[in-house]
Amino acid sequence: MLRERLSHLIEPAVESLGYELVLLEFSPGLQTGTLRLYIDAPKGVALEDCEKVSREVAALLDVEDPIQKAYRLEVSSPGLDRPLVKLAHFQRFLGEKVRLQLLAPVQKRKKLLGVLRGASAETLVIEVDGESLQVPMADLERARLVPDFAKEFSKKGSSEQEDDGDSTNE
Image (cartoon, rainbow, N blue to C red; front, top):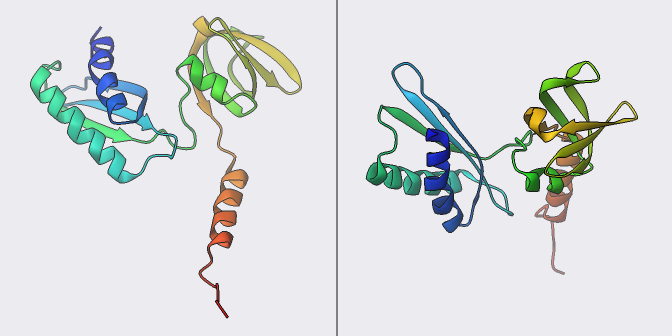
């Protein structure tokens, strides 16, 4: 209930700043809770973006005061192993490697690692060891991308080669 209330309160503020609220987590803790926001943007997320969202959300929470105990606010990017939460996330990353944790087993397995081949509101299709498995969305506990570090490093390497600072004008 509190998590839904926080999402309804925070998501419009984050979107008005030009970011997507990928995931909101609230852990009440014994003495101090933690409210963790994962944000994203088409150009990616830098430290300055997290600071900007943190200031705006902190001001909003000070006014609305939805959390009755002490808590810490953390804002970060989803990272390379980003969580997949919304249907749009799954559809965006079709063809990518994913790790799924299930509430109910599919073919006697509650953990699956494979390539995401399909996504609808009811079902995910994941290819595991050459076999296509249907996973009901209702049975999904969590999902994350599996980073392709070779691809990420090649992106970084090619952008550094384009601007190596060695140009000469003769």
